[in-house]
Image (cartoon, rainbow, N blue to C red; front, side, top):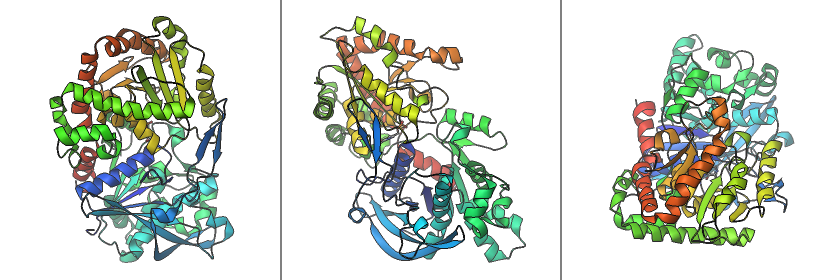
Length: 558
Ligand SMILES: *Cc1c(COP(=O)(O)O)cnc(C)c1O
């Protein structure tokens, strides 16, 4: 390990399928970023929380109702407890923090360490020992305590470990923005309290902020009274007010004020963020995915043969057009076979590898509109035939407190067995492992967000790596990734009215009837062409290697 120069802070990180330290896209992006840093030997260190009980384990009743239980996992199998301890004052009491070290390695020996903070330390008050148990669990007080541990505790840990070489602190979403308050205290201690303006300037040069949420309600906000009660001295004096955050604490605002570089996660999301926060200069760096993590084993073997070096440098996938079509098709069928085996074992849907299979997996929440396709099944079945059916595979968790999201899952269950020539399955407990099997195993990846609420989306990029085209509303990354009939298909158009957006169901059905179904069933050669160009255009670009190079050039050392 080279002395780290960049510290990457994230409330969640998908480091390995066996570690339940993430809930969805934000954590997967963080994990992919860490893996890419290891591959590229970017001197980075990661900081997150341990999440002893994970996000949650999803069970679905026979009627499709979601229930949640704690995740049990063997921390020792993945990470090592280190002897260093740091402390933070929360609610007027000292809280000792332990840390576990996870090592992300490249194929050789280069390591990016990730530290997972743990409040379950003997001697801590009972109400504090569980603070790093549950990701996105609990109330505002619980959340603020967690964010203080991540931001303030995280910086203290890095200093206690002697990582004085860190020059940039990257906040992946606003959860960790209290780190700026700790950095400011460091500066003030070093230069004497008088030099506040200069200290703020130094902190701003150290901080980088990536925003992910295009909805105002999605930004963490804490009342002034709660902040005072929880943080007391920790957030006190110059800390928050120096960053323009007196009164209620908005974590995004703090991050914006404390950072010299701010970006959204796709071109469109950059525009949306600039409209939300017109007082700030906000750039964009489109997300990517870590290629070797998401490509199925059969397609990996194919790439190893035809695109040697693609794992270390996925830009090489630009030359995917040299892969013989039938070989790509066979590799894809092998991946599809693995998926359908999983689907049939779990759901008894009896899906067939010869039939067009569409995947839809993401957090079950209203703006992602999992019901959009369901509204069209009635009419779709009229154009399907027994030898040209449609198979649909769904997955995704609803946040435990999102009743509406849970009903959306139930609606998919209700549609099962109602239609001839349409097979439907909803797989429980969507996680990294299932995601990998899904994105490589379906024929088409569907995405139907209500624009402009999809900041980026990354599952379609994972699919693209596997040669799976997207059928998607033009939002998030797809506005950059969609080349009609070349990398997939758009649902609807650009700059649409609300009325047009609400009519996306019909546009989706038309695209399926007129383009996707006939191409898949009647023009296999043309379908494989789309698969290949999806890899060449989108696999070669929407990867974390390209993304991290942009962060290095624009944000870290720009
Ligand atoms: C990639 C991934 C996501 C994010 O997918 P989106 O396209 O952003 O909705 C969520 N959950 C898991 C398990 C993933 O692997």
